[in-house]
Image 1: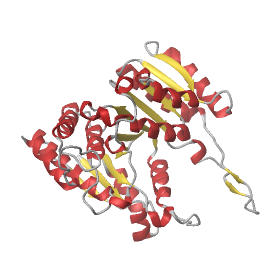
Image 2: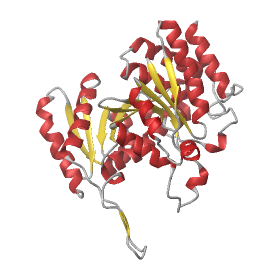
Image 3: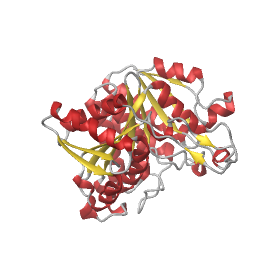
Image 4: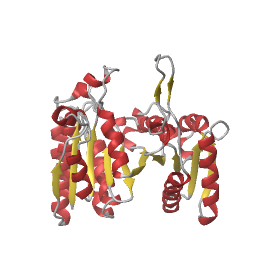
Length: 353
């Protein structure tokens, strides 16, 4: 297995380092030969090359069987609204150039942490849903975009093609077939022409998947129901902007954003990353929670290599670390918090037991 490592910015290098420990342990236990090749992205890449997603990084990703990605973002760019080159441009370029059109974001609860959720236990216990967010179209990429000469008006264009919608929707149907056979199409078809195309396209695909029940909901209703009754959902598909917002909302259901993994899937390349940001305030302090990145590696074994036992081995030791209190300060309670590096060492050791 050839894995590209993109540590990125902030806490990215630290959580990637712990994940590599776990992946190496899995390789040793199950008899896999795993090689890693590291590349720069984001602010680290701007500092090194002037480009947030250099060509060399792109080539390393193309040649890999899977990509493990940390985080992007740096305050020196966030706090400068006039900066012409930004770390986040590297993320968008990477998604576009690698053809990563579907962001897969699961949301589930951990029994030992359910009391940490901002929602009542009875509302969220048993939640197990997954968002498929379209990544390479929509308002983030549509043209024209910009401002008028006077700087008094700004505009962004939301554009989708039937082909872009179809490939994501088919993936959603296929996910639903392997789960509870419920698919929710999230749109704003009462207002937006692009949303009406989404709904029309999904409706045309419905007869090909007769075993899947399809529901259509407006994005504002979904935002409300995610808080009221998240267990009502199974697989949700949506466009780029709506997905960006709703997946962050869903992520806090578990009690900590630092626990949720994700995958970005395309036709050839598959990338795996935690959903949290670069958290620059914690960078270099050995306090960042690595579990979301480690769980992203579990998704990598399942989605990139179809190795479910290896994925389960990682999920099991993460659950064990939560149950036994081997966790970082963001979720530690009665137990003394562990350092980021200590959590990584413990997880790797448990896998090899």
